[in-house]
Amino acid sequence: DTGVSQNPRHKITKRGQNVTFRCDPISEHNRLYWYRQTLGQGPEFLTYFQNEAQLEKSRLLSDRFSAERPKGSFSTLEIQRTEQGDSAMYLCASSFGQGEFDEQFFGPGTRLTVL
Amino acid sequence: RKEVEQDPGPFNVPEGATVAFNCTYSNSASQSFFWYRQDCRKEPKLLMSVYSSGNEDGRFTAQLNRASQYISLLIRDSKLSDSATYLCVVLSNQAGTALIFGKGTTLSVSS
Image 1: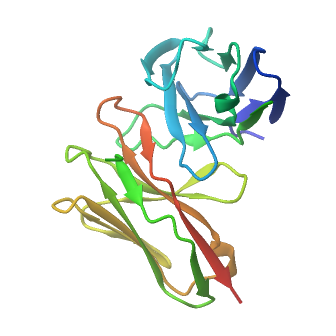
Image 2: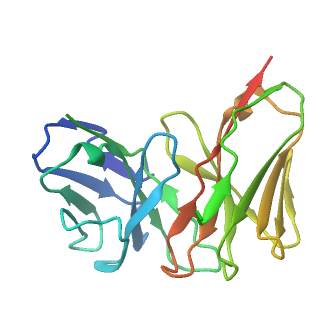
């Protein structure tokens, strides 16, 4: 499968615990994005990487959230001291980063439930 | 005001019907517009880009009215497989790359 992959697909945790999600983008895609989607809403942008550089962060990304893309390939999103309001689908997307229209391809998401 | 607003529906139509979705956006400087489709519990997938001149892809037609900051999607001859949530999307100028999604409009096509 050459699409964007995300692991785990589901995560249930207790409030206060830390969780980490992984995203493997389409190979050769140099841009990687994280979005969050809650029930009944469209995805909301969290952060964006160009290669290993994190170039943009949304105001939604509180201090408890950190994202990395150390070698410009896969990325991790960590949430510290989880809260019930963090329960959502976390979507990763990647794009080639060139051309007039840079289509973003989404992964299947990681569904987080905070009890 | 939300950056991208859509009527959430649901729209319940019979097979063969024509259905139209509308969307408005608040940032007049926005340059790129899209419709994404999202099936239940799946990831969003690009349906089509929206150009100023309007564009058509088979049964789907997208229109953009920059003066009114309004985007539309028309689906003709609806199929059962068209049942999904349709997300209106604007490319953010501020981030340059972030997609700004509407809440989505749910379509249910029945036989």
